Length: 95
Image (cartoon, rainbow, N blue to C red; front, top):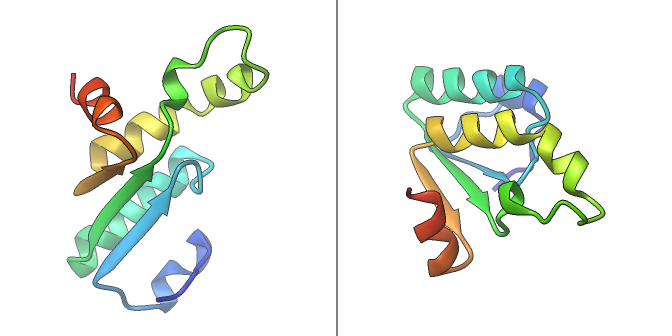
């Protein structure tokens, strides 16, 4: 297991790439991981432990996570698997 920044992903062969929450901070990061996994046949797992897209408007981090919504959605759409922390979250994200 290695912890690798996105800009160093090509230097480390992997069978599996796991990204957590908002480790990817731009759509370009998402695309880079996606392309790496397609090129190397590595499996991409996106791990999400909270429903960051359904925070209450008065939540102190709502604006921050709302700005990351496209990245979270793109990661979940492009990953080969998603790991979530609860059955409720899995059900909500599968809709």
